[in-house]
Image (cartoon, rainbow, N blue to C red; front, top):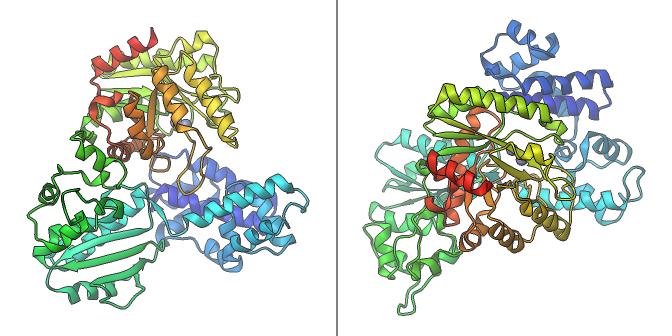
Length: 565
Ligand SMILES: [Zn+2]
Ligand SMILES: [Zn+2]
């Protein structure tokens, strides 16, 4: 079990204790434990009970629970309390803007036991009149609930990818001769998915379905064979799974058909009778390029097959040579223990160097982000002195002095000019007062983009996929402003954000705006998230030439110098 899973259990247990009216001293000890566990670097699963007890802020009782979770997957007190707490009430804890206290009031005083009941109550205007709620809170809760409803049964890309590869491996172990392909949204690297598609090329259809029937982590939902496919759910997360089989000579066509969006498949050249779909259905092809060539198009990479802009580009012969993960030369946007990161600056730099990168642009949080231990002016100075020393030690690897400056409510940056001046580059991001209408949000961002010290715009909408929608922005105006002021837009590569959304990358590129693929790493392991950002860039048609951190060190340095003038 990973640290984050254990932390989730401890956090949940503390919240449910609070929901059930347990004394505040006890509740606080769990919140405190979560705070401390988040700072533990070594894997908790490797620690013995006595080692766990020695961790800061972890008493005997909590250490025993972690130890039991390590052995059994979950500690029994959590299981017991979950049995006596309505499931819907626990679900309500996940709703943005509610918090334990409000959920407790809604449940204990007003008998609401599920998100559905709560949504009903909001829609009948019953929440606005409750003490401590009001009209505005009711509307916020209602919007969160609608968003929550729209996300159920969906997962972010890494989880979809994890299951797709696991199921493939499970099947492959049963029969080495089956050729198994991951198709659908996972092949297109879509940021959110509710269904996993696999294709197995074999004549032994029944054996494939039998293997799936017998997998203890799957649940069959339709009798097989229905349309030559096995339909089911992954028990863990209720994600839908469809596994199809086909004969080997049909594999190329079937992989093609089940990888692209329907808008892409509907494409038909003027001179032809058949759409891409009909063509693939009716003939045997040697490879996917041959299918495209049959409609006089060049090969289109799977990530782009959304029916979004790729068919136009292909027709005009303007398909880009897409960025690859290997093209990324430096890591931009990372946090260290100076603010809320888990690894020290030196550890982060060494991790980047060892992973083969030429530079790191460290960007801890700025002073207003108190919750994230944002840097005071004297800490900025201290960090920059450490960077100078490390740069001597780690050369030719280089650390650039950056900051992730909060964009304050009025759009200004978080430090006076003399401090801003000391950075090699500045990422400007919004982290607070996220409830804004489109006008307010757009103006706030534009003010920050106009600031001569802003090098990059960080996670433009503040969204957290499947958890928080993000504030609305006028993308066209924001992109226009970035083009005018030569500000780079980041694709935040954290799989929770993937913001700038890929649907807007094309417009940014057209306007000449450069992109940076930024992992926003809060620990050394987070550096690897870069690949998710590359996937999103590829979906938007991004090339290496348009990506600033695909520049080798000397050129990146020159780019920042030029930018600073
Ligand atoms: Zn941020
Ligand atoms: Zn950040």
